[in-house]
Amino acid sequence: MKWIYNVEAFLLDIFFPNKCPVCDKDIGYDELICRECEKELEFVGDNYCPRCGKTECICQKEEIYYDRCFSFIYYKDAGKNGVLALKERHGTGFAEYFAIKAVEYLKENELSNKIDVITSVPVTKRKMRETGYNHAHIYAKMIHRHSGIPVNGKLLIKTDKTLVQHELSAAERKQRASKAFRFIGDECLVRGKTVLLCDDIITTGSTLNYCAKVLKQAGAENVICCTIAMTQLGDGKDIKKNADVLAYK
Image (cartoon, rainbow, N blue to C red; front, top):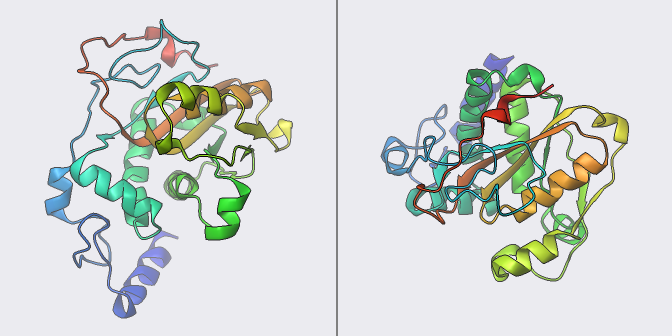
């Protein structure tokens, strides 16, 4: 069915030329990002703890509810511009670019066959009514498109409506996230299963952590977090390599 998607993209490009989500320059109908911007992305490689997903490991400092977390780039320069474009609805190509990389990562780490369902960090009902858009779920759906793994965007709900994350301090994020999410799906969809939880950025990790907690309270066996970008809070020297992160049932 991929050829159908390519034909649709080609025809759409005739009337609405494809744009680079980072710099807004015209690109080919089958491209997701221009080569110049791709070169400017700063990839993190394996310079982070695979358990908590942070360059400055927090595994011994906090209770981590998810079992693994991986990201691709630092949230800076071209990477930041791409994430902001995704948040503003015109950077879906950026999400697809990293969805392809996420699928490659899952295959390389022998995780593809262990994930049962993909979901995403939710936005509030108010925001969905206003915009009809959840950028994290766009990323989740792109991973579904390229992997075939089932996706479900109706497992979690965000109940907190007062402040958005970037307006909060690290301590406020943790306090707010601890009560901001609730499971609303059928527990049979996650009970005893491995869930891939998607978001655009990991900063303190509080949002992902408490979403994972809620999923596990609903019966999920494992939660693997997948983000496009991470904020660079440490220099990578405090990384704790956890050998047990691959031990999924």
